[in-house]
Image (cartoon, rainbow, N blue to C red; front, side, top):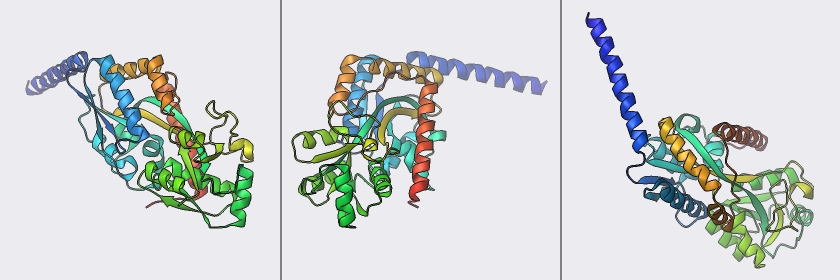
Length: 326
């Protein structure tokens, strides 16, 4: 008799819990949403996050507050979101370095992308520009490689930090071209770009939005683009692949994630809003203006395949480069 009562109580509790969760999903969002950006304010990721947050706020009819939690290649922000209440009121601007590279390069992380997060949308997948200070006497990649080989170890390439996509883009080229260059890590892309402009470093693989203004103004010289095809902004700029390195392809993607245990109904609401954003011409134009070509809507299965493909590609790169940061 007591067992029957206990079983009935458990069933009733489960029903009550399911009803409560359903009610929460129906009312979502009923209070402000926090969108965590794991990089410093003012950078391209922060600008991207604010564009996304502004659209979500209008579309979901609720305030979206952007909160910057920078440091440790995004790990600080990722940990904060992973430990947050999975109620849909804390979202995360994530990137390839956070979801793919960090787990490959570090044995110990305060978060696990597969366990702790659900990737709801991939907003953009942007190419990188290989750019040099004009003091480098090279106008093509072939000329740069020849110059580097006659000046071994004298060239420095900068990045936004050790282990990030920008860093590994340089390491990939260094290995494929067989040249000696020294990596100089900075605390962000901004300081690295300033040193490139001043000539303190000679080379950088930079994101499209950051690279275009100084390249178009002549302050820096672009040698190649990391995508498999040429880009509309610089149609005469050859790809690195067509410049003698056919296996070279690097891009920087950003997406929006939620804690993995967020209820399906709430996750679906957020994803639907993000899908509407990516089909909104004004939203897409805002991304293009900051150098982030938007991706069209992807189903959850397509997003998962995109992530799996990126993991497999970078796993091969990291293994070939023999890099470990622990």
